[in-house]
Length: 272
Ligand code: DGL
Image (cartoon, rainbow, N blue to C red):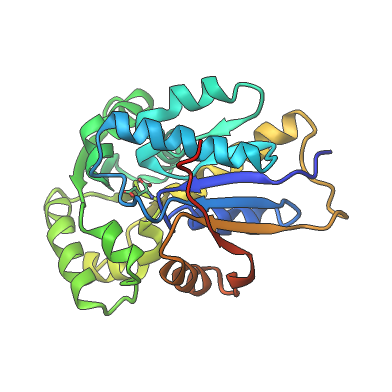
């Protein structure tokens, strides 16, 4: 058994969707969360920039003694997974895309899969490639949604928020026209606006949560080496963000359903 925490990082609050799923699936596991809130959104950045920041984030979490890494950011997964797994070959490192694509193929009734994600993820083509490798016949329609992460980081998550609904209508219209039967939330921020997305879609489509999808993969990797935490051990959660603490704390509190203020610290990864 290994009682050290699991490290989780994202550009901001999105990776909290993985943290919440972790607490549901493995309530005995401790975690350390880092949101690079001052540099979000990552989705408008170059692949080089995203790689650089992702590697720094992972090094920061390693400096906090984590036993595994969840790359709870599709944008980092799409652009930096090879570097992250090479840098941290001694511990399990899991990204979002492979487990999310597998889940989408599993739940899609007719193989008509819509993907919404950041510009950098859609430009990388990683979801199309990964889904097609699992289901060559799948019909895939993808839309980049650059307005969503800034809105969510700023706290526009209520299902009746007008700016959020306008953005979702714009992004989801082509997917509804394409008659998708499953929607991949290919950005870990998007489950925070799940209710608004369902309202815009107007029908109960399976929504695949890329934050949650990677959790069972990391737990399986830990279990394979007998490295899950002892259920009797004291569990801890620590949250770090690189700035905008008030917004981060408010969104996190609303989403996780408990107060995280005492363990939120402002850090900057620049000294690495
Ligand atoms: N949560 C990140 C993702 O899954 C958002 C990236 C961004 O900051 O644009 O891609």
